[in-house]
Length: 169
Image 1 (cartoon, rainbow, N blue to C red):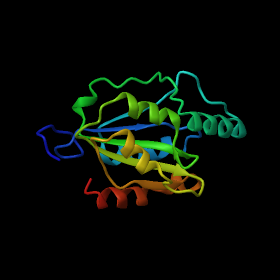
Image 2 (cartoon, one colour):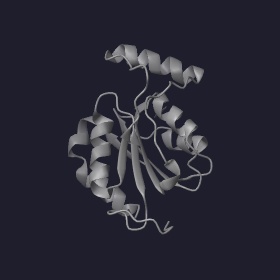
Image 3 (cartoon, rainbow, N blue to C red):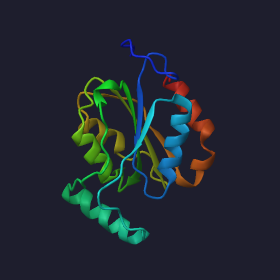
Image 4 (cartoon, rainbow, N blue to C red):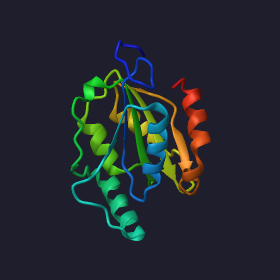
């Protein structure tokens, strides 16, 4: 993975952690990863926020995923080509990544990069999120993902560390 770029925590790799978080669980997981690997961290923020009410979010997410809707984002990443490793975080919504993450992955060319999924969930694990990320980033190397139950995310540092070690990160 070395291309001569230096990052304080990842040897020769320049790292970006991007994530969308509705309830805060994915943000917590992203912060744990960022603390261990360094690099830059960016939250994916849609132009129109999702409702706070759980049932309303579930209904909207299902409709968006069914129709293929890609919500507009406020988030912009300058110089995406400078990164070698992109950690991509999302809640598991209807067995896949949230639509804002799909928008992000559709808007940026991650060719030649290592893409590393991490997913927070309420019992459904990774679902098909890794497959869907690979479809959205066809010229990226998608590494093994991490699934963390939302109720366990605040105490997941050891699991995150073990996963990163397994990935040789």
